[in-house]
Length: 138
Ligand code: UDP
Image (cartoon, rainbow, N blue to C red; front, side, top):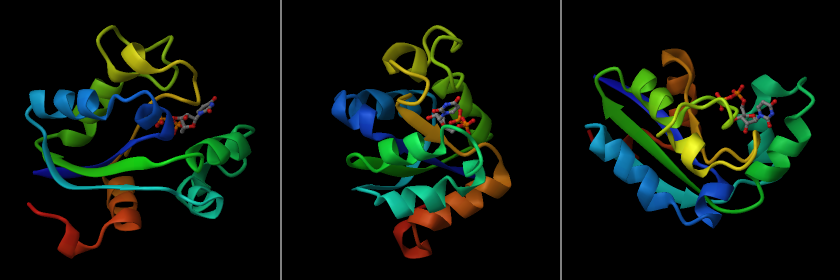
């Protein structure tokens, strides 16, 4: 059994597709074991995306990620890190496979609706960024 962090980004909340995204997770047999809505400050967003601090899109990305509420979730299931990344689709929605979340709802390479941890080590760090153990219900 594996866990990963999922975020419905500010554009996903604004586009009113929270339920649509959750439906896809549940439809794929993934369980939501923690969830909350919150708004990141610019500083929070910079900490969360620190790995991208030298990339040209860092300032714009962290502005965007702090522009409105987000929904953060811990997903649990077999092979859930990979499964979630498959459901999300490629970073650039134009390259994302048909039927993926980003292909269906993203409008921009930056405003691409969802975030998902990219590996087991990042999943642990990203889950701990948002949740403590008492907030996760296995
Ligand atoms: N991003 C961007 N421009 C780029 C690449 C990425 O604005 O050229 C944003 C986009 O929102 C992406 C996030 O930065 O989801 C993190 O990038 P990463 O390469 O980690 O992609 P992901 O793991 O989210 O698919």
